[in-house]
Figure 1: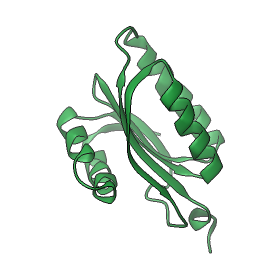
Figure 2: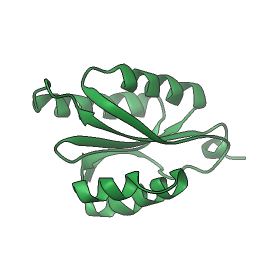
Figure 3: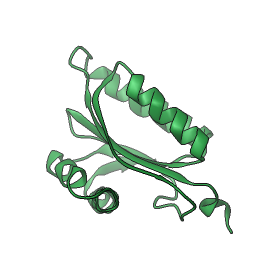
Amino acid sequence: MSLSTLSLRRFLYVSELAPAMPSTVVGQILRQSRERNHRLKLSGALLFDGERFCQLLEGDPDTTQALMRRIERDPRHCRVQLLLDTPRPAPRMMTQWQCGYGDHDAFDAAAAGDPEQAAHAFLKLLPACDLSS
């Protein structure tokens, strides 16, 4: 079994930028995500549409669980809604970490339906987004 299929936990969530936060905080979140997720060997993507975040996180179960709890407590986020939580061995959906901007209509598609469909809808919207590693 390859390292990418051992003990994988996958989260998909949406949240909103907290009302009191200046727009400059988004760049800070993107920079911190790139650095931390690379260091923690997490893969996935973080998208922002001007108001909302949608993020897929994959990696070590303990690491991803701790990061998800941290995001839920982060004052820069509000109305965090967990769409998917899969704690099982599985191949990664993403091989690297990416951040970028996406269309808000696509976020609505990712938030609809059952959890597995939400993850696949999220992956389908990535090619239309402005992404960087």
